[in-house]
Length: 293
Image: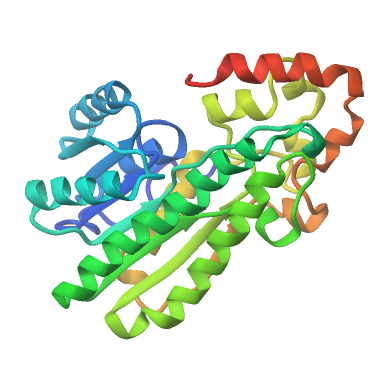
């Protein structure tokens, strides 16, 4: 890349308080670090408090910012309400919500149970709904304006994709929620936007989606016209802009950042047609072995 510096000027998010679900690892952690470096106070949430606490300590050390780790299962609205209360008790206000918590795994749909759908839809769609409702209702009741909701969706929310059908269903719902509330809540001074990332490797998610030798057999970079996967800094620059005052006229937009991948071939995981049926038992064992990493 031509530069390793962030896009926004120093202090661009000073005084802002931003909550990131799924903020302890992966892209959520990277966004938290970027926001902190720009002067924001950050709350990171997930179900695993020990992971959050370790991440918070590391980020505070490297950025000098303030991080509040809060354990929260976004599928449970009572958990979400308690999380919001803790954020307000710590910072006094909150300016932006980033819905990044997600769950996904690869599988032929005929092998899935209703429980598998329930799990993914619960985290991705209902988790986003629960958090957005809690924060939105708070802002509306208090008459607070210039607030932002940023959802992380995916390019196959438009196209669908084989082998990740629960995720495709859930992310399509997040896409509809984003655009619907952008219209309905604009009168309250709440902007709602989304990012649709292509392949941005993260350790835990990547191991579940392409476990074992699949990561080499199905090289995601080969699907991208630019010939590479994304760097976290590229996505965090975009996220920082969308939660900043500089994007104040952007509302209801879904920004794709994938190097042109979805234009080249719809359905990010459709290439898994090449997996032999006999391999799926072994793949399932590998995926189960990476859960909770």
